[in-house]
Image (cartoon, rainbow, N blue to C red; front, top):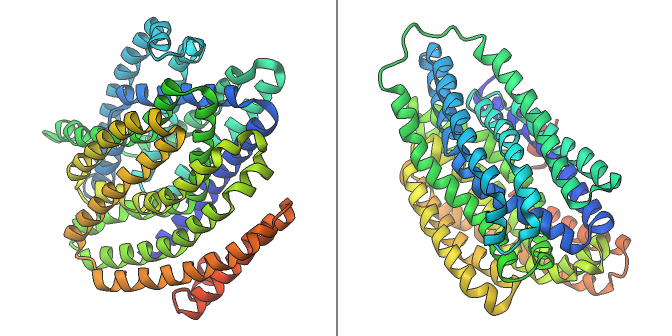
Length: 489
């Protein structure tokens, strides 16, 4: 199987798994928001998860992505070092989880009170287990990515999504409320983590004969490279979660529900871009090691063009149909999320580019530069949230996210350009064509949206946009139907 076939195969596997994960997440969002939890309960659940995501940073650091980078390199050049790399990583992660879990268990009530949500104390106490199982699930996914076995990584992700849906809904129906939904998350991640660690051990660790000696300085390089990744991951998590936490501190759980719902919908829309970025990124490390930058540039430019072709129109369409979509699908109780989703539509394009680019920079060895950029924009996002949320409410958090992420994306693209020498003129010309197609599509959707009065007509309006986009994309030559059929097939 050549490299392109391998990428397509990996993309299909990852996209299917990501589809299962996002479909289960969407169903969980829909069932919890529309039928099982009121906005206060929904907001309390995801506020607690947001706090724990920040706490998780101290338990994981950047070790998972660091070891994935070195696995990608050494599985080709010196496979005997792979078991040593995994042993070092797991040992350090266990120590970190033990320390952070103990501190959280002792101080969970104080933390909940200090953040202004004393009722969240039970969530944070149970969060000790959440930290462990979430770490196992995500570590196994990323490590399997490092081995470039994306099918296995995809399986772990799909199991976590399906498990969360099954057990969260089951526990809420059993009468345990929002806390029951939280334990559903715990069980889902626990099953996925057990499967992932099992695949990692039996499928890879046990099949590599460890070298007699650990390469001198390798463990030090592993830990050192985790530092910029820690900074990047910390900034990324803070960028994604601190706004949720701050909305809860400054406003109320219902506002958290509105903001979280908007971000969850954008996550669902972003699944294909995340799958593509996850798939192609290990290849950049291999190509750089082999001095094949021309091939890496071609793959990245093609992927970026396809991402923009899909997500610029998707973002415009999402902003136009946000109100009928939320009120008809989720319910009138969540009408407050409409302006949030409309602002976050711009974030969809930015995050699609980020999903394609960020992991690739890690494999190109530019994690430090990306960490600086992410850290700076995360601090700016924090500051803007503190200013905008009290001033204009929950929409302020969305504006802060879009504004700061625009800067981060620009820096990421510049770093990729310095590494690969992108054809900026060609990319600009293509982007202009995409914006033209989007403008025509947007007009078509705007004309039919006022007629929407039920779900059937809503999906009809979406179909009008999709058909208009598809026809123009083919006529402009940006989409080759034959190539699409070959990839799908």
